[in-house]
Figure (cartoon, rainbow, N blue to C red):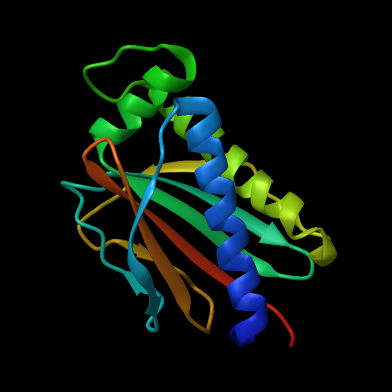
Amino acid sequence: MTLCIDTETTVIDSIDESIREVFEMMADAVLVREGERCRVTNNQYKIDAATNGISVVMGLTGGLKGSVSLSMSDEAAMRWATALIDHQASEIDETVLDAIGELGNMVVGGAKRRLSDFALKMSLPSVIRVGVDGIAFPQSGSSIAVGYQYAGSTITVLTALQAHC
C-alpha cells in the first residue's frame, strides 16, 4: 500500500523542511531543490555511482513504516564532514562515514519530530557505498525521489514509506 496523497505530502514536506534546516544550521548552506518530486514505481532507483556514490539509509516504524535514504557524491560527503566537524579529507574515511550517518540522524530525526502524530521510531543509520544498480527497496508500493543542489552536486532523498489511509 502506498501513502494517501495528504500523508505523502505531509511526509515529503516534513523531510524537505528538515533537510533544509539541517544544512542551514550545520553547514551554513541553502539547499536548492531540483525540480519536482519523482515517483519511483518499481522500488528501484538508479543512482549514478560516479555522482552519488554514498548513501545513508534510515528505517522508520510506527504509524508509517519503511525507509528514508540520502545519496550524494563523495565530494558532497567530504564537504559535509568539513562543515559539520571541520574534518578535511581527500577521500572517504571513517570520519566522513560517521558524518554522513549523523546527517541521516539529523534529517530523519527532524522529520520524525514534525511527524509526531505517527509515533515514529527510527533505526540507526546505515551508511553504504552505492553500486551500479542503485538502491532497491524490498517492499511493495512506490518511493518518492527529491533532489537538492549542494556542493556542486545533487543530494537525492528517497522516501519509501507505507501507511494505512
